[in-house]
Length: 173
Image (cartoon, rainbow, N blue to C red; front, side):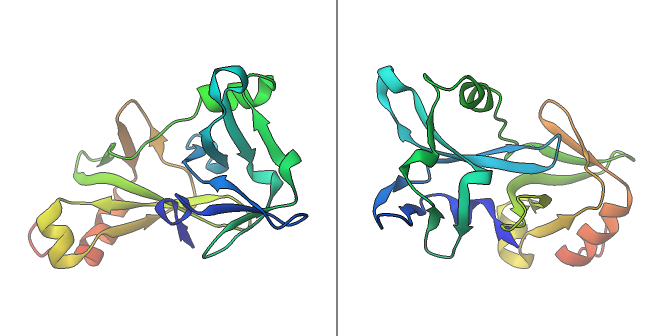
């Protein structure tokens, strides 16, 4: 399991020439399908647009680098309509409030949890405030079925409240 922030700033290395093309600037994931779709690199300038590498072009997401076959894996939004669509429709849900169907506020999404081999998003890291994060740590909520993602809110089943309580050692709810 990998946290999204572990991928940010990783160097992007080509396997064919062994060169570093840049670093991961941002993640592209689709919370509605539950899959990680790629990464952005530094901007390619007004002529080329943003640089994107699609997930299917990854060789591996390692501890110290993201590897790809070669430079041809990099797409530019100004030249590739699919890459432009992917870039424009990316969604960042960090900071979204996490609520149960019964109306219990569990905190906010701090990070995504994903399987690096498949790109499947399997859960979120949830913060219940700085003090609780320091005292008990952040909760990790995993799911089999995707939660409902609205504008600024993620709605999860009531059963997640029990998991959240166990992970955060809450006695009084």
